[in-house]
Length: 137
Image (tube, rainbow, N blue to C red; front, side, top):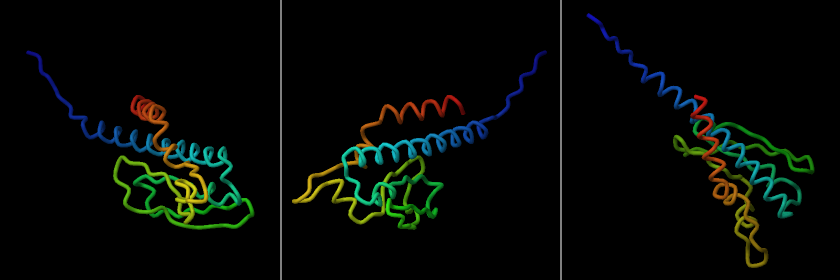
């Protein structure tokens, strides 16, 4: 008589899935950050470089992480990545107080969006990053 043995590998599968998703989100964050920095540069919305250099991304495992950046004049700025990031999310943003005016414009300055397009105009690229990460889990 034959015997059948079942092995529960669901824990390993879940850990591999979580690791693959974390890698994908990190990659998406880095790519989105690059897209935003390229957009702000392309639109000639750079004076000192502070805004461009402050753009970063946040995923759950980076909450509270300290980061610093320099403007093109050599001034150094420090901050911490914010909290409130949910699992399986990536945020892109900046802590520079005048960023909304550049992104959305004012009555005296046209909008030069850089964050929203970085988040919304590259969906197929981000899907491909997730797909490749899951296939290589």
